[in-house]
Image (cartoon, rainbow, N blue to C red; front, side, top):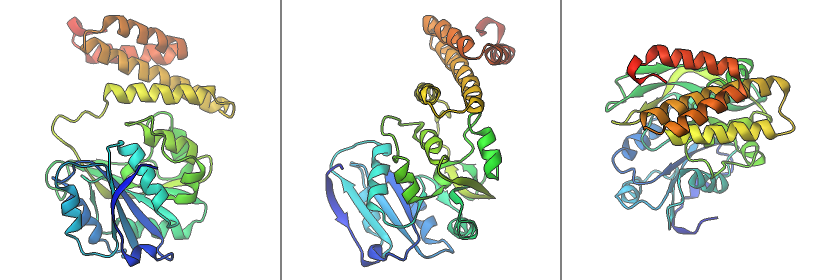
Length: 311
């Protein structure tokens, strides 16, 4: 456990009857964290804790959090920067409620977010992971640029699992003991730790999504949804899943297709960066894992790319 520098603790945090803790890990989030906290304090569902793990911020993040007198808020300050994934594990270990809710420090929770999710959780004891739809915004969370929908039922979530992430990490509530049983977050992954966790968590419970946009996801200038590091991590996760003995034949086929798609996607990034040796290697790997899928995605890629720049 990383050394904790300071701790703001309240009597409310010791209330064992509180059902859910919102865990928020932040590093230098002073520009947006007030909006995130205010949205949580405006929830129609009042019986929650907010655990903020400050990952050695060098800006005013800690000072901003300390301006709040709400007894539901706890601030944990880490002495050194360990990265968001490891910081989330700190929050997971410090929390004691049955449910953990996730939210990033630059996002926004709709007023009924926790109420809708906890109602669903209380109505179905088999659910251990509940997400929501979301919306994308830039500056004003009330202005919705795009709605993000996900499959609703457990069967549909599992069917799509290896094609595209069927859950929005920042929108989730999860049963804490199941997350701990699954091993928590793998700190080796910075961008795909959520996908890795879902793979382990969903062997222990059913999942669902509330069909209402209840989380606003902030889109920053210059932000890319598919960093090359994300693709690298996805390849590592898929490869590890294929090596596992418990991987079913159906999952194995889907993971091979996902690996092929990811290698094609990474080959496109290689080409854009002028790394042609790496590009040909990734194309070769794509055909090794799933030749039909690789060919299909290469054709789609070529059709969308100017001729002088095509793969």
